[in-house]
Image (cartoon, rainbow, N blue to C red):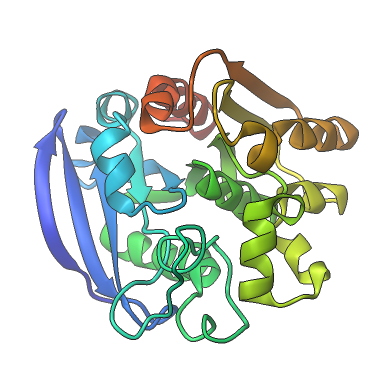
Length: 280
């Protein structure tokens, strides 16, 4: 698999790169970013943290506003940021911002018109990891995953369905139970059809209830987040983790909203959480 370098920029002794490749999963060009810390300059393989972004975002939102490079460089972490959906001419879309391009929900669609390209589950769990392992100095035995909102949903479900792959898992304001909230109840029938048993495979609370486990979780949630009560509902995750015996650190952060001002404020905490579990 080949990749095209879109840009590379020196930052905190490491390199922030943006890359493009042709995806076999989505049938489109896909763009992603990779920060490699200074510890990887001689080819040393470093632990990696995947960051999955939220609705309307591309790789660029967290790359430009996440404020992760200084601490990632200090901890020796590779940070990988994929896009949130396929894009381009011929790719299905929707007039709403919470369905279609920018809103892939990290699932493989089975329904028209989405099925031909909207295969973000296969992309982030299979194709992109294989590509990254081939082209970057990453230790694939030391992987962590995090994400924001829709990407927090993705991070939780990817980790829960790949036991042992990820040694650390966290999320910022995740959609913890998409089957129970308006965002998911719009996207899931569009992408997967009306069989709600299929939805449960992409619902963290449902997966935990069915026996899926991770070692522990860190979740930060802004108390002033306008989506808190209707779309995010972190108490559902707290209840599921308590019933399953999964250690959950859930922090409700007073005054913070859903934006990258919130995410960047707690990014260092999350990367230190991951590094402590990855040996970074």
